[in-house]
Image (cartoon, rainbow, N blue to C red; front, top):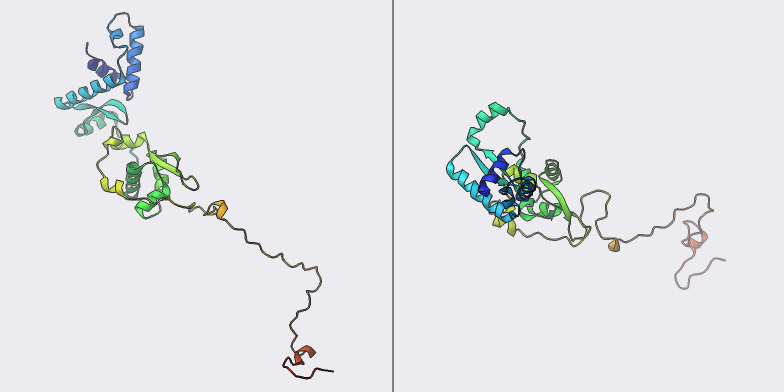
Length: 251
């Protein structure tokens, strides 16, 4: 009995996609509960051997030109029906409500994150040239993007990356399956020298650069009158005294 047919039978009967590591666990579990020696022969099959066998099996299904195919999406393996048979399958299982399509700004932002991850919101905005607050929130809510850490920059801003849902959405096995986008990868992103933020009420410079401006205390309304001014009041005797040399003084 060949390994590829064992794996094919498991995936055909599985209710959800399975990774190569999960398939290895199933092979080991089968060997422990089997009465004959056949399952025990596959107890120590490696993950790499399982992956190689599944890739071979996927090629055989593709060459056979059947109505379904075997594919790895987001690191897990499962059978897919070919798209041209969708009308008949929909008649069987019914129509499922699909989420609204991503807008052009959302797709542009998602592409930047996918090719340059991990990166901060400010770095995305440098590349796009516009604010991405609302678009980024939409991608987070759809589960296509997630927070993956913090950047080594002033303020330690959050960094973002794509998720497994992103791979499923676009039918990708992993990020290496993204189309070539050398120009996007070459865009230079300047790291901020000081803390940058668009959030109101937050400091825009490190604490050591902030200066406290001292203001004089307010006058106490209950205190006495202020000291007399050294300037002569208009019409006073002091004003009539001449400051020119040799002028006579008042008696």
